[in-house]
Length: 272
Image (cartoon, rainbow, N blue to C red; front, side, top):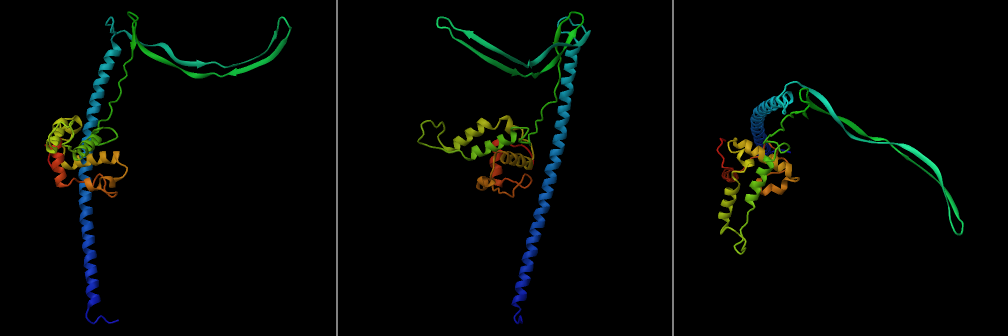
């Protein structure tokens, strides 16, 4: 079929240009996503490195204190200390078999009966030892101090900190505040004053303060971690935060209007 007026050619060209535009938009979005992902991962790597160093220092201090307590008798001050087994702990249950017969004879109208009994039992349970410090000078015994590695306090992980979920809950609670002028139990006289009271009451909460000087993209990351941890379906918050099943921790961003609310709520002092 002849394309006398070049209609098919123009349509094909238009389609080609639209496809190129769509691919270019995807390329730009992909590039932006990768840049943001690397930025967040770099921040997390440095943050977690510092936290590990803090944990190591805390453990060294705990171990130093434990070593001192294990090496000096708290009763007489002697350093002539040994480890000793003070007692065992646990339970042991025995086992065995019993068998035999029984019989009885009645009185006045003579009667008798007999029978056979049998049974068995098992041994189970555990025994353990309890090591203690013992002073050879005065005989005093005290528990051995065994320092544990400090627990992780990663404020960007909902699995090791309450901070991300607390951030999510505070923001959503604030956004869902309502005011009923007919409620005699209502403390405030307007929604605006109720919101301000909420900010005053919660802005200095530990779980919000920890994000006060974080970059915006890390506050967004932490918030999404809390949302993801507490939410089964992203579409529940589609209208409020613009998320869907394709949104992840590296792509989520607050709208500028929402970010203004978050900044006010956590008294943000960081840099974008």
